[in-house]
Length: 428
Picture (tube, rainbow, N blue to C red):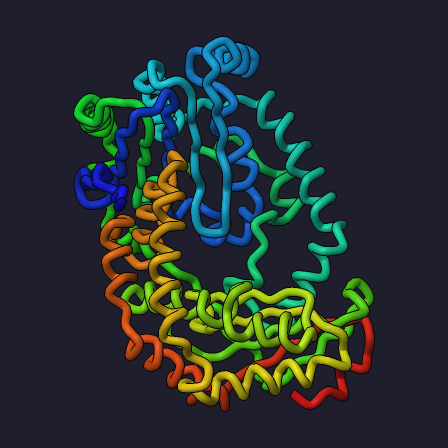
């Protein structure tokens, strides 16, 4: 039985508003509003951390309801309201009973386009954000991560970016800053509106068309200010082939990252997903060899990174096993005929198809897949279209990717992190 994903609706309202709707027989409705260039990456130096604080305040009240009244209203109607900030995006999230969908959409568009700010909320949330910055920066895992990436990547790379921001900038934030930053979010972003669950699509679209027509910022924009919907900051590596990082906060064993240059784009999206499953996931060749047959590793993961244009293979092992593990990986990636199992390849495609059909039980699976497709690649693709591409992948596609990685092994980068200085003498 093929359940399929047949109900995803994608419409553009003008050039920069993207409406993704999936009406489903559910009692719950989930709504989300995304400023695609609303994240901390786009902050000027004087604003570092202010978008994080803005996120704390943007859904704290409405024009008619103060902080306490809005909080009481959410409780009485069982409407959940949240906002979040990432490095690239800022988002608003509303969910509740399907009978309140239009009310939630009305509230969401109000705070998305014309939020109401007041000094009491600013003061309250400023103290919370300042504590959050202090607490997070004091976490050993946080300190280790940024000490590590700052040695791997050049300054101002995507992977070295901290969303938290600067405490002094946060401390100086004013309501005028919020108004300016909101204008920047609207002027520079594509706007993605997600709706999934119990609702009538025609009514939602009609309401949004009406609301957007009242919002002059949507029509009176400067195209040159807009970032692309698939804006992707890059990470530039420092010059090294082997980078041992000895750190007091690291484990005694070795955390190893192998970076292999690889083109990562929309066209090879399905191939890369299959390749990861075939080689680096728990049933893959690399994992099976190193974990089950040789008993050398604790864990392994592999992923294709758009920002780095790399296949990254991470694993953990004792220091004395690092060289054996890397040699085994190099040997496996040098012989396609030996590493590739045609039967397992065909089985895997069916397994992935089943996994994705199972995931359709989740209200937002297809919705977020489409959103990520737009933001990663600038292309609308739903799970139906993706599954067709996945099922069409053949042995030659995998072999082409394999041979690319094989030829690029000469340009690999190896990073090893441990508190033990013995890692500096390893031959990788």
